[in-house]
Image (cartoon, rainbow, N blue to C red; front, side, top):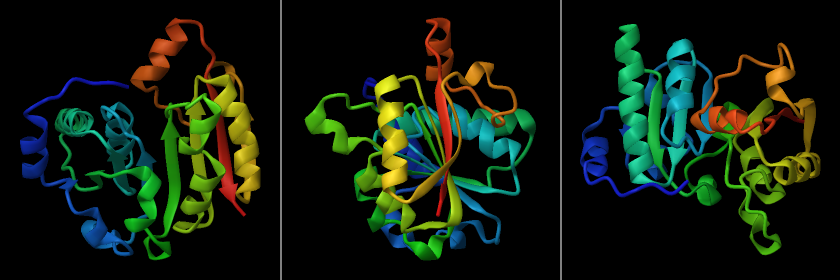
Amino acid sequence: MRIRFKPWARPELEASSFYIDNPEDYKGKWSSLFENDNPIRLELGCGKGGFISQLASNNPNINYIAIDMVDAMLGLAKRNIEAVYNEKFIPINNVYLTRYDIERILLIMDDNDKIDRIYINFCNPWPRGKHRKKRLTHTRQLEKYRQFLKDKGEVYFKTDDDGLFNDSLLYFEQAGFEIIKKTFDLANTPDFWENIETEHEKMFKEQGIKIKALIAKKK
């Protein structure tokens, strides 16, 4: 998603208590930020934060890290998190935002971080053949996630794009994951998971586009 430059975003992020500007320094020790032994879960490509703000505030006993590459997106995510937590009258102590290129994620994560779940929502489908290696669900990316995902850790993935979803089914198998659940119509699949609709998801549903989703487990 393209978004206009927001001059306030970088100053607000730098002043925020839950934004990390030096994620390389926390490789292998992200749990030190949370100061507890609760599970740590990761959202790759958090966008404006609609998903992570609801998920993290609904689950205070789970820790979350949300990553994006764009300051403007992260600035909006920061404001969304603040708004949701303030509305629920709870402290923001189980979620951190950081800016990083997900293709280089092994520079900020390793097996000591023991991530137990990864969320990937409506990532860029990169439909052209020469660009497909940029997909967040491509085999080469999934092999990176395996290095810091706990044994039997899970990836939750949803998309509107048929091509990306069908290719991803193969990518997960190639990378040593077991697909334990999948659906080609999330809205009409009861009890698939406790779904939190993203901004993109609502837009696609209004257009009559079916949402595809899967849960894959590290073998």
